[in-house]
Image (cartoon, rainbow, N blue to C red; front, side, top):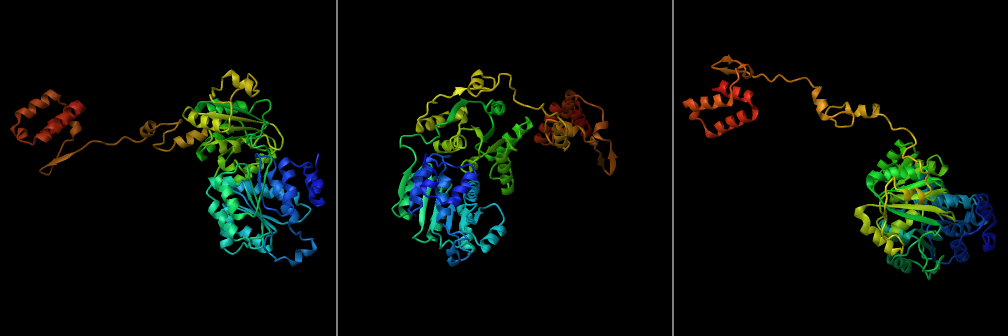
Length: 504
């Protein structure tokens, strides 16, 4: 079995990797390192979760000049030697973490830049000087336009998950970044899929790249060690099913993917109310909150992460046993990258996908594109026997591990507000608490006060009609006013009739 040392990797990088428990290269690393270490342009394609980061990270660290190398003083100070572009903040942080692990003994300074955080720390680090910059396209281009980042001297440029950049609309920004780098650079492009636009980008900006594919062209894009289960489920029953999956015999860390931010927030709160340590992860959260949630998830302090697709590319966490698609993915690419968060680095995993009745057609398209055997998802509820057997859930499992929260302070606090409709109070009860209005009215006739309407004796609708017919003064009035008076008397009973007789 080949080792990193046999592939020509520097001893200090090998030592750092061994301390991190990495001793044997994956196929994409073994096939790529011998080419990338020579400075050749390459296109690497492999399944997600198979070690693409180190496939380009090790050559960048080894071909960069470290501060303790003799030639370091001849470099232009403050200008990075390599640039790595990633589509999402989470993926940029993951790449930086892997580089920090592999380059711990080299002393290579790595800076991660992305949006959603303050500029000042990034600007200060760039002034101090960095060797490798990892970032998202928007913030990288912004820093270049501010003249704070100079990438005119980079010897290597990496586009990681290039197909995701295409999906997110980042290709124009990527091309602007490429135009600011020297033509003699080494360019490495890595991705799980290779759409036509990415191939065109490679032909335009790469010099005779070598194509490296770590699996046969007929192989599936998914990791074969991941067991897949597709269920047709009702939306209201999904949290109950997830809560029971969390108590399966092999359940460890779990990622739940939702379609919308609001859905992610709601599902995370529902699972937390059931007693499971969970947190949402979506674009509306502050960056510091997103990083805190990811850190807790990696450290095992958080068991469930409920995320939107923004995290599908950037989460590389050990010990993720299950991935649950709360809603059917948009297409086959999203499906591949979602379930690729489990079964990583040779481990096994389980992927569960819920398909709503309205999404059956979409799922059938995904199923056909990936040549999967799940054309007709089985209708499933939280009480269905087959789900217990499929996912190794104990028979007596319930959908919560803590008793339900009583209708206490959280709900009554909201229902105390007037006009608020909630489980603790209604709009009707809010109105009943208000003091009754004094509806007595008075009139004046010739300056003299006339008794209030409510004090006059009641008259029936029949008496009112007789009075109107016998009063010539009334019969000469406008027909519209008569009709209005009669309509009021018929709809309001004796009280309205009283008003009519008082007025006459």
